[in-house]
Image (spheres, rainbow, N blue to C red):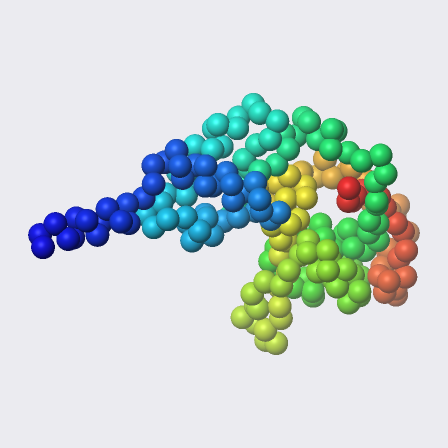
Amino acid sequence: MTDAPEETGMLFEAPPLAEQERMVEAVLFASAEPVTIADLEARMPHGSNAAQAVEMLQKRYEGRGVRVVRVGEAWAIRTAPDLGFLMQKETVETRKLSRAAIETLAIVAYHQPCTRAEIEEIRGVSVSRGTIDQLLEMEWIRLGRRRMTPGRPVTFVVTPEFLDHFGLENARDLPGLKELRAAGLLENRPPPGAVPLGEGREDELDDDQTELFEEE
């Protein structure tokens, strides 16, 4: 009878770390979406240390053709950046965003969490529902918490899918002002006396298109 507790404990003993590393590798390899540590531990045997197993796996893949990378609060296996050209297809389907959508996305990314009113204040023009719906449909932004202000407006934040698409660990890794201008995301100020872009217009009238955001 005295051996029962010890025997019970043996039944729930966590597997060796090397085996846990293999489990993490299997889950990340098979998952199309980044996986959180909590999700990993929920799949693994009781007592497993998914965080340590991920760290071991990350070191194992250093310098290889694929890497274990952090995406927000989750982890994924991704192609090494310098080998990305090998994954390019001959035919690339381009998803075009209007200038209004790009500006809205940039504002959310740099000012999150922000409300629709705050987006409009920064842009200086009304934001159409279609613009917000397009970014929500692409899963590049999502609804955040409501503000504790009159009307309790909803806020918007960028998603892990947005970070993953652009190879960012978190929003702090977003490019600076210089890089944005070089990419064409920020235009020069209009000359003195020029009519502001959004004056008297809804953003759905702004049909300038760009191919800065591409989907392979």
